[in-house]
Image (cartoon, rainbow, N blue to C red; front, side):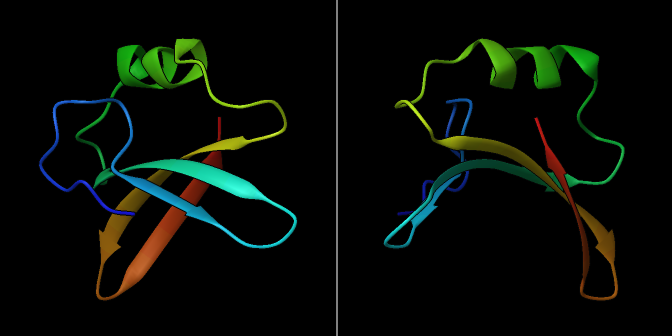
Length: 66
């Protein structure tokens, strides 16, 4: 599921048979400490993973588990 341009904390929710992930996506350097704190504070289902995906350019992404 995707909600690009959303005003919520997460832009993407993806899952497989064993894991559920909630991700915020942004250009590298755009999101700060407050954004990471918002991700940590936002409730997600038990066992789900929270991630920050930062686009570095040239097709490269940095994924941080929050």
